[in-house]
Length: 485
Image 1 (cartoon, one colour):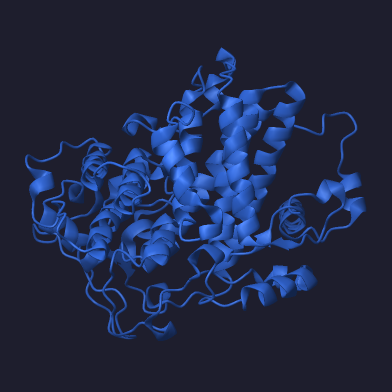
Image 2: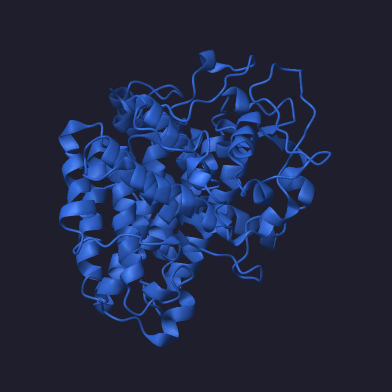
């Protein structure tokens, strides 16, 4: 009976956050008059951050890595690799991200009360990070009225993605200003920060916020009304002193799992079969690494008869290929799978910015730094002459699209197991070019978004219908704002 009550309460709480359809009395009854309504910000940081990262790991394994051909299922009925995404897949991300966003907003509000500019800045950065994943997944979503059940807003409107992105940029500006004050974190709080271990100068968090700023600016860079190119130039070139960004791998935003609770990988309790037993690495994923002689392949793949071999994605129903190389068991507890954003990704953002003329400097410089950092992040040495090898060496004689392919295929590997970032970048650029198998559905077109959760359609129907009308439908092929021509 106790478990039933807990489950029922958890479901109701989730529905309140995602749709705000609960009654006011529910909120009032569950207020404790003897406690503070706002938790201290440092106590919210670790559990909320850890929850999102762990959830993102499982979704990357199930969804991103199937869509983007990191691996291929060997279960015929699992058709994500064929571009079939069932509406129920949306519930997990929607619920987890909105629940976490409530904690990050509370972190900011609690820090305001305590006049802690540091935790205000951290709260804003994590709010932006989480919100960007929500809107990049679905498009127009509840934002300005979301997570406001305490204000008796139970059926929030859906904000346009353009407006959401504009406000995310505003929040990152505010975070940068707040963290520039360098208000020190008490020594006792250091263990409560799983990302930067209570960096006393808070400069690491500031670098993360500005690096994330560049990721989102590049994502929206095709929309002229945002004028992203000018801001990218300011951050990366003309005003670098005011916008510090990652300078090396060590500054990357990675929750490095310890292998000991509480900071363990989402796969810590998995059986090995649950992690790698029903999938094999794809031909695309394996062949690039083999051709380049990339040492990361030993970290990411097993051998079959002494060789690395992949299998084709998008195979026809019933024509299941024999599994070849697969994820090694050691990857289940790999600390680097707690990646949010790393230095290598940042360098590829800068390489693209240089290629498109947003910043000066040679694209090859940033590209080579990104290639090398992608390898050294994994504790490996860059092989002698690696950046001069066929398929890796930068070639200024190539067309713009071919240069984009070089950047994006390397970026693809830097985003290994990083929530849905491989997929978002593919949607934005069309790179890397993925092979198309004979069994693809959806007319062979990569899904552009996920459908809204079914319960949101029911419990916030009026606002859902307005959002669907504004976006042009609730369909896998409806492009989000930053992806529309």
